[in-house]
Length: 348
Ligand code: MAN
Image 1: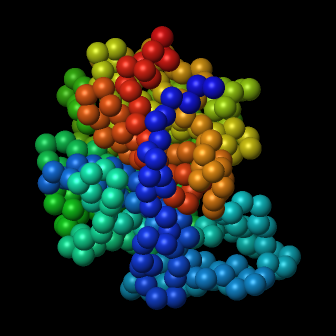
Image 2: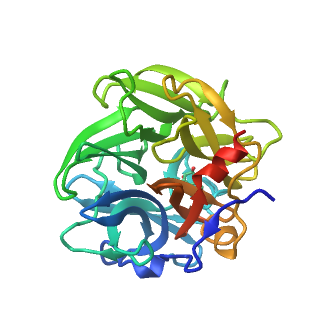
C-alpha cells in the first residue's frame, strides 16, 4: 500500500449536479480533470464539463459542434449493427469514431481551496468547429510573467491533438490553434525557460510500433516545438503498463524537476506516479516511482462515469505542500494533499 495522498474529507468537491448545463436540452454528466491556477489571490479551476442530451431508452445521443455555434445531436439506436460500444467514453459508428459527450471548460474560483463558485464575468470556454468539434478537454495551465498558457486536448473527427490559448485576464483569449497534431495530448509547458528555451511534456500515441509514452520537446516561443525525445515509457507488468501521460507543469525542487504523471494498465485503471528529471537537462530521468503515489481507492474514485480513475492535470505548490485537484472516476472533481519531500523519498 503506497498511496500517500491525503484526500480532502469534503471530497468530491464538485459533482455534475453542481454545474448548470451550457444550454437547454443538455445535461452535465461528468465534471473532471481541472486545470489549476492562481489569479487575483484566488485558486481557480478550469474544469472539463462533459455534456450530452438526456439519454432515451435504447438510443445513444451525443452532441457535435457545428459552424455558427450550432450543435448537431446525433442519435443512434443501440441495436444498430453498425454501432460498436465497448467504452463509456467513445463509440464507433459505421467505421468512424465519436465521443459520447462534448466537453468545454468552466472557470470556478475559491478563497479556501474547497468551495468553488462560478462568476458570470468569466464565461465558459468552448471549442470551435473544425479541429475542436468533439470538444476541448483536460487543460494544463502554465503561468509565466502574468501570461497564462492553456494547453488542452482538441478532439474532432480528424483526431486528438493539442490546442493552445493564452490569456492575461481570463476574459480575453488569444488562440494559437493546434500546436501539436494528432495523435497527441497531455501537454504541459514548464513554468520556466531552461537555457533560453521553453520546454513541454506531450504524449503522442503510436498504434503499430511504440506506445503511449511521455515525450519532451523544446521551443523558442511556446508555439513551435522541436527536439522531441521520448522520456517515460510504459512498464510491462506494472500499474502503468498501457499508457502514461504528464499531469501539470513539473515542480522545481533541489533534487530536480518533479513531475506527477498518470499511468493506466490494460484494464484502464488510472493511478498517479512521479518522475524526477535533471534540472539542467530535463530529458534525463533521474528516478521514477516503482509504485503509484495514488490509486483509485475511495468509492467516488472506483464508481462513476468511468470507474477506477484518479487523473490529475492541475496543482498548487505551497512550500512542501502539493495540493492536487483531480478527476475521480471521470465524474467528480476532488482534491488531495501530498508532501513533496515524501514523494521525493519514494523516488530514492
Ligand atoms: C484519458 C482521457 C482523460 C480521462 C482518462 C480516463 O486519458 O480521456 O480525460 O480522464 O482517459 O478515462
